[in-house]
Amino acid sequence: MKTIKTILCAAILTVGASSAFAHGNITCKEYPKNEWRPHTELQQKLEKEGWVIRRMEKTETCYEVYAKDPKGKRVEAFFDPKTFERVEE
Image 1 (cartoon, one colour):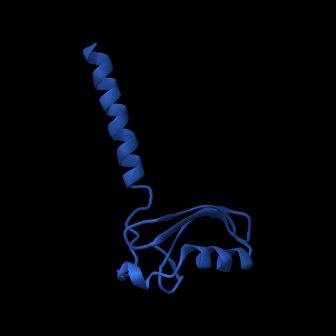
Image 2 (cartoon, rainbow, N blue to C red):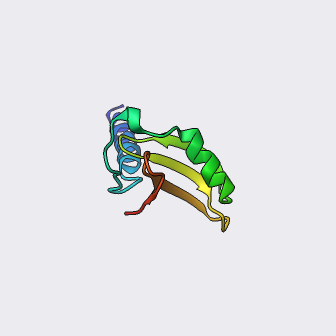
């Protein structure tokens, strides 16, 4: 029983750590939330550029986009919520 608990705890910690490091050290400039442009506006902009959006999320300082870029490559990209500029590591 103790072994099962140990394995379960290790698995939970591994999953938590991998998701915490999924985006590395990417942060955008901090703005008050009332200055953020709507995520739907970013989605429309990207789709016009040829992106195929799968999912969008808000982080503390960025918009995080899971999509296929115009070249068809699957990407996880971060965008400044005020300027919509792509933020790289």
